[in-house]
Structure formats: structure tokens, C-alpha cells
Length: 263
Image 1 (tube, rainbow, N blue to C red):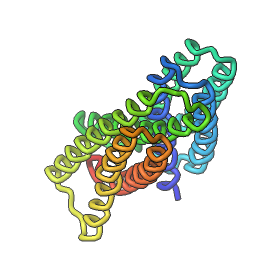
Image 2 (cartoon, rainbow, N blue to C red):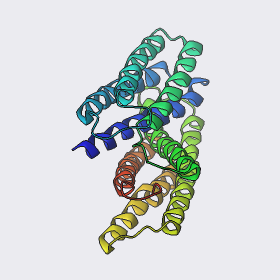
Image 3 (cartoon, rainbow, N blue to C red):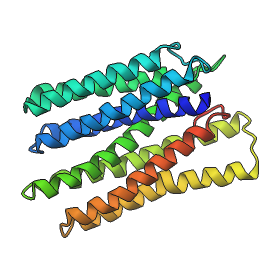
Image 4 (cartoon, one colour):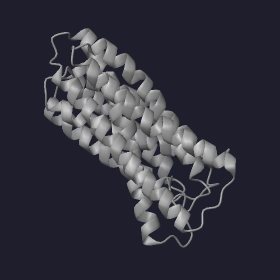
């Protein structure tokens, strides 16, 4: 139960960081303010869940930043998300963009602080954990952000297609970066003596199929839809991409529990 709570907390913090990153670019454009307001409400709910999960851990797993850090991080991020939503409600775009940058930074710090402490971890292990956290959050955040951005076209049909095309492009880049970090982690784990049963490799293959290849494939299909352009079709495709990204990242966290390097 404690391990599951740790996974949920890390998942929420990574998604918070990634979605905030995904919103920073559109914040400088003409994307309607409601897009940012609704997304920040989503982050408010997610971090409320993260706070509950952190409390459920109850110190059974010691994070890098100490026991109370994940809970305090979730509460702080929930409060910042609410404040940010009020800022976008007032259409204060410059202040709102700065709030997004702050939430992204806080989310990344909270995600790092929620990692289980590894006794005698080498610098390369710590670096791999940081890179894994960043690439994981960016993949989930850009995929979810692109899907939610697609919904904005239903309320603002005059919105330029270039915003969604650019967001889909970021998803493709994030999938490539995630694949590279995952491959590096797997190679390092094997070099450092990773031993696993056949079922483990089956789950790992499924993690790669869903969390990297399927996400990249959905992004490619969505980009092809935008050649028409058909934002509604692209949004539906990105729905599937979000499911694949979330499933792949949850599997990656579970598979990495007994591995010296993140997978």
C-alpha cells in the first residue's frame, strides 16, 4: 500500500510539472484564457489527490526530501494552482504565465523530493532519476495538454490550427526523449546486474509499446489529421495518446521499484 501511495504521489507531481510546462508556450499566444483556467483546476484536483496519497504513505517510504515534503509539496501546488486559475479568470496573461513557470518549477522539485531515498546511490543513479522524472513529466504533460488544447477548438473555432500542430509536435519530441531516457536506464540497469523473470520482460515490453511507441504513433496520426485540418479528429486521437502515456508511465514506475535505474 505504501509503495502504491508513493507511485501515485510521484505520478501526480510529474504530471503537474509536465502540464504546466505544456501550458507555458500557448500562454504567450492567443489561446483562450479558459484553457488555462480549466487546466489549473485539473491540477488543483490532482494535487489534492497527491496530498491524500502522501499522507497515506505515513513515512513508510523515506523520500529524498524527508517525510513531510511530498504532502507539503502537494498542498503548495494545489494552492498555487487555485491562485493561478484566479489569475487566468481575470485574464492577467503575463502574471498567469509567470504562475505557470512557478508551478512547473515547484512540481519538478516535489517530484524529485518524492523519489524513494536510495542508500549509497551513485551520482549516475541520481542523474538518471532526475532525467527520468523530467522526461516522464514532459511526456504526460504535453500529451494531456495537447488533448485539452484540442477541446478549445470546440469553443473557439476561429483559433489558429498552428497552436495544436505545435503542441502535437512537442508530444512527438517528448516521446522521442522519453524513449531515449528509458533505453539508457535499461542499459545501465543491465550493466549493473538487473535480474528479472520472463513476466517482468513481458510487462516491460508492454510499457514500451504503450508508453512510447503508441504515444508517438497517436501523435503522428493526430498531426496527419491536422493537415485537413480536423481538430476534432485530432483531439479524439490524442485521448488515446493520453491513456497510453499514463499507462506506460505507471508501469514504468512500478517496474523501476526493484531496479537500480529507472526503466
